[in-house]
Length: 155
Image (cartoon, rainbow, N blue to C red; front, side, top):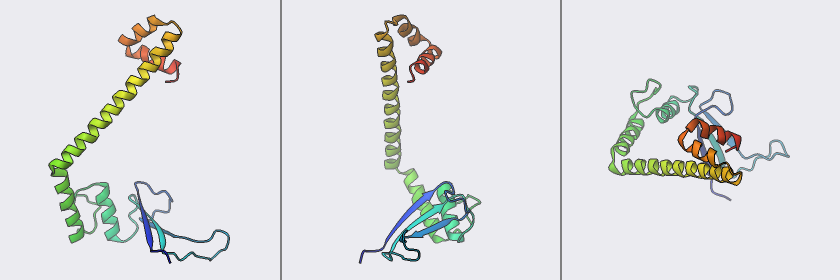
């Protein structure tokens, strides 16, 4: 027998449109109605938008949506959610987290710059292949014209 497995998805929208805070699915045979696998596998979808469900779950989901205990949508402020809030505050204030956040930001900026450079290089190469050197020079000093050329070449 396989060990029980629970896979949890946390969604920012109600992907099933039934206004529940939690949807639980178990394995079932598609060909034979009522035949369940009974392997202990469950998929749980937690929906941050619904206020229908256990107050503790709704409070957790609302906290995840807006990580502060001042959040008026948090219905239950028990020791578990207060402990979670304490951990989140510590992480937010830690130097390691700040360094990681800055590193992620720097990586994102670098990727964006590389993507932009690649786009400009492709445009310049295409223009050069068509002997449109005047357009290369004009685009270098005129952002609107450069955008027009990006559209022309579908870049």
